[in-house]
Image (cartoon, rainbow, N blue to C red):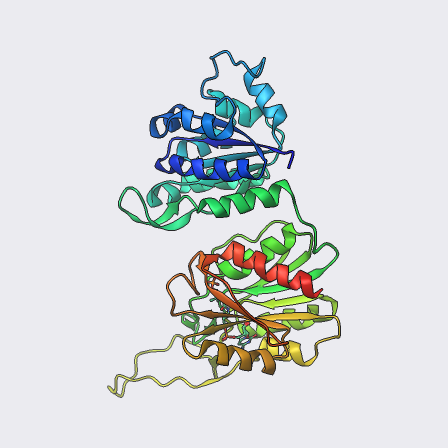
Amino acid sequence: MGKTVGIGITGGIAAYKMADLVSKLKKDDIDVIVLMTEGACKFINPLTFKTLSGREVGTDLWTESLEWKVQHIGIAEELDLLVIAPATANFLAKMAHGLADDLLSTVVVANTAPVLVVPSMNTNMYNNPIVQDNIKTLKSYGYHLMDPDSGLLACGVTGKGRLPESDDIYQQIITLLFPRKDLAGKKIMVNAGTTCEDIDPVRFICNRGTGKMGFALAREASQRGAEVILVSGPSTLEAPPDVKFYSVWNAQEMCDIMLEYEPVCDVIIGAAAVGDFKIAKVAEQKMKKTDDRSGRLILELVENPDILKELGARKHDNLIMVGFAAETENVLENACKKLTSKNLDFIVANDVTMEGAGFAIDTNIVTFISKTGEVKKLPKMSKDMVAAAILDKVAELL
Ligand code: PMT
């Protein structure tokens, strides 16, 4: 493919996983230069990467290189992309502050190609505000950051911090090396996350939607050249750069914004878990415990607007509409009903009772059902990859 990728490996237990990634890249004829910190060399022998990449592995700033006259500059000049994975807390700090005291960090400073950083560490270390600040700093310099996966970590803790699967890192590398612009010139609106309905000034009803699925769609669509409008309920996620972002509280606010933009959209994707009901009369003051000792409180709920149904009813000729169906039983049957009643082009059904599917996790297991009756079941994939598959289908329809 004629591209060169620098793979910078720092001292984390996940360093061994990079062997698989290097091998995958080489199979696709991508030239790889591996650079390892001293810590990385304690986890895995550079010889492994020399054998897999077929090139000298850079480990020391002071060793004379056979390939490059001035090693760190020569390497940096060759790169089309630099990947730092796994990136330890220490290396993130060095990058965020421009420290250049070993071969990899000097290459980072000398490099002018795009950079992909994949942090991996213990959950508490990852959540440390200093580490999070360093990640923010790197993002502000235009570095691409991949979120770590959640799961059982080598230290025995279960939480966020695992290095993503090598397939996912590989996919991200390919996207950055060969940016597809197949959605250029298209306006795509995505909704994401939960919606919240007030009960009183301090309480509200919401659901388990976090925005992971919808934000992945917005990010992918934007990377593929679309002009993206993202309308999300409350979420802790950061909106992707270059996306017009609306943060809303309840279903009505989400509906109002989406109805306003509908006439100018080419594609609308409903990934949000919109609350079907709201409180009939929101209490003006904080509600007190009942005096009647019944131990019961009855709240009256009324229907929220069905956003996709309203959009589907006024759908203009060239608009592609995609919905999701979060189901716990009769998945395909229920999804088909929603596909028809909301006038969608296709629906993405997820059985949210399955492990690895649905709310608040990084993966999903989905089936596409088209209005033409075509059914396509996909295996468990990261939400980023599900987003790519949905947009492939959208691009086909466009
Ligand atoms: O945000 P995450 O934590 O990543 O979780 C992802 C997800 C599980 C929320 C996502 O994959 C998903 O399934 N989203 C749709 C959830 C849902 O509300 O499904 P539903 O079957 O109730 O609704 C069907 C479709 O109609 C959806 O596209 C929904 O956005 C839309 N809808 C529903 C109700 C309503 N009042 N208005 C709507 O537009």
